[in-house]
Amino acid sequence: MDITVTDDKTYLILRNMTQVELEQTRLYFTKEPDDSWRYKNSEYAPPKTEFFNQYGLLPLGLWMELIEMCKEYGFSMNFDPKINNIIQDSQLQFDTFKYYSDKLFEGAKDDKGHDISLQDYQAEGVYKLIKFKRCCAEVTTSGGKTIMAYILFKFLRDVQHVKKFLYVVPSKSLVTQSRDKFELYENWVSGDHNWKSAVLYSNMKKADREALKDFDILFATYQSLSHKDADFFSQFDCVFIDEAHHAKTKSIKTIIQRCINKNYCFGVTGTLPSADSYDMYTIESYIGPLVYQFSAFELINIKKFATPIYIVNQILDYASDNDKILLYESRKAKDKDDIQAGSKLMKAEVNYTMQNYTRMKHICDLAQKLNKNTLILFSDVNVNNYGRKIYDYLKDNSDKDVYYADGNTKSDAREYIKQRMEEDTTGNTVFVGSTGCFSEGIDVGNLWYIILANSVKSQYIVRQFIGRGMRRFPGKDKVVIFDIVDDLRYAHRFDKDSLKNNYMWKHHLERNKIYREQKFPVYEMKVDYKNQKLF
Image (cartoon, rainbow, N blue to C red; front, side, top):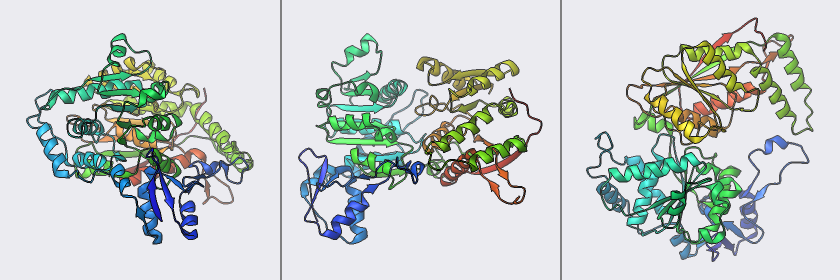
């Protein structure tokens, strides 16, 4: 097959294909949405997506998958030479980049007078991003993604002469945090300090609005960028998507598409979707292929740059046999034609656990016994006000300094709580926070214990809350994550050896799978409660 590229550098054009090549390519690049299992045997199932369309066009970002497919099936490839100039910088050598970064960090010290430098794995990751120009990298939380982004920006500006750099983040707090870190790093390193920054988010101050008139790098939320017209984006020749797993959303795809003059497009996150999935193909379509990965296991066990994580599954058995039977019968009677039936039953289980006094008291007693700063994570702000109930109980029944935050809490208040926890050397702080407000971009080193109070299974949420504990802090030798598991399983009296898994138990199994994949030590602790009472 002959492969060239469209004039707007958005699609590969596949021509002169045999019938076998055509059919196999269409099949290879057809994906079901990642949640298609919800619609099994349902007439409402979402259609499959054909990334290779009827006009012979394939998104440019899937070029690496195209090569892999051709190698797998023995198809011949004839690439137009101009494609190579779009997808990689063939002239750039690692030694050139390393020389630049070493000179930049020569004599660099942080605010405490400690020597700082770019780690080898960080240099490798940044080099591969710049080398391949339009691509993604997965770097675990606490792996130094922001300093990698800073070096990438500096090299592109100083050596590759990129003029306008767009740095896209999902929240206002990450806008200011990223900008502040860039300016902090700039104070640490040597060389020319000749760039200007600006920010874009809702309800900006007057000084920030004035800065939009003249900048070299813009830190912006994708929500605010979605309100800008197409002409605004034409000024950028480089786009950097932080927390790139969000790039499957329509607003970010639109932002990337509108940057019609970009020569570089990068996506970096700690939690990309699994390879060969619909979501991963979607992200790669707009940004580019995954060219670098650095895992939590490598950061902790090989580089020794993060705090070891230990998982303790606390399996709580508090439900009466009658309640377990009722939940079991509900699952057994589920309408298989109702695509919402599973969600309804899951909600019933959640409501049951959230109303159980024994369960809540167990979580609060655990937090009270822990002798170091603790984070209690809950996921459902609007279900039974569970996080608020935990907060109120601890305020009334413990001597801990207890704080609460959810998605409605202002960023300034969250920063205040974070600062209080960071400065608390007594270990007396408990932060009750939602997964939404305490996931991306929250840096707290003085955190020793995490209690997962709600059942979740999303790999993004799980890997993000694990990352909250990996930040290093003087004297911190480990972080323990207590995963609260609700055992609502029921075994029929005639088949005691066959426990029927409830939905929340299945979530527990999914989290365990993630823990094992990340190679964290996992321990189990069974807790049998009797005579519980309800609110």
